Length: 77
Image (cartoon, rainbow, N blue to C red; front, side, top):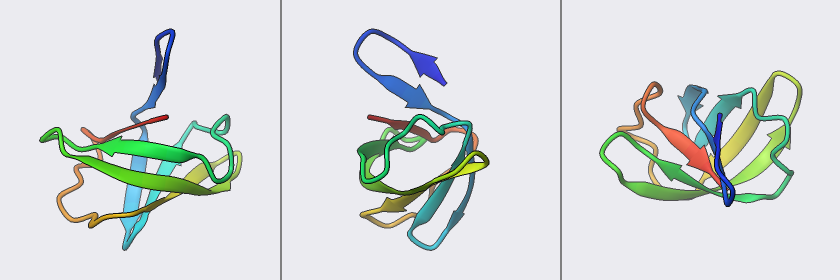
């Protein structure tokens, strides 16, 4: 997670399953929060937090999830 004055960015994407993206170490994201998902090519997708736990934060991606590289994808508010 990196932080600047205006936004938080999370980069620990652990896996993708269909329209769901699983983040680790993001328990401070709020349920129903709208997020931006940026892939390795710079393509932006929208998403929404649908579950928050100590282990994972689950996001529903509003667009296609194919081509998402786990190591290079970031999520921000």
